[in-house]
Image (cartoon, rainbow, N blue to C red; front, side, top):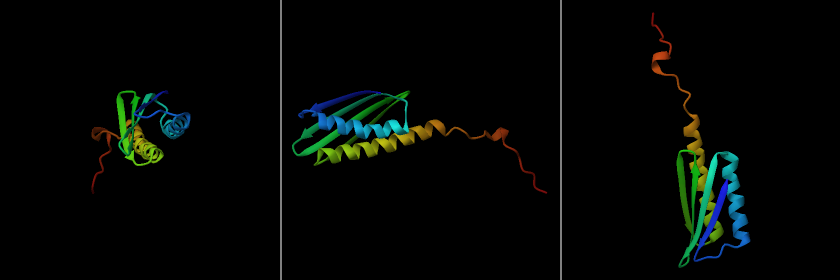
Length: 109
């Protein structure tokens, strides 16, 4: 997975970079097919904002979170992204239904 971390009105320190990498490892644990991830961390007045866009095969998944604390915003972002990735993975693998024309018909006596 290619990871790009940008800061807007904020310098991305090694501690922040490691924290983001640690939180995004949770996504890789659930879903291996992530091609690219782009994380943007920004500060507007007293509000810390974290955005991420994951590029997976056939779809881009976007999530954002805001909080007064940067680490809390990154935690909320990881939770939102984790839910979206699990839902996307479930949609990909949930095609095991049997068509109606192939289902057995029960006959009543």
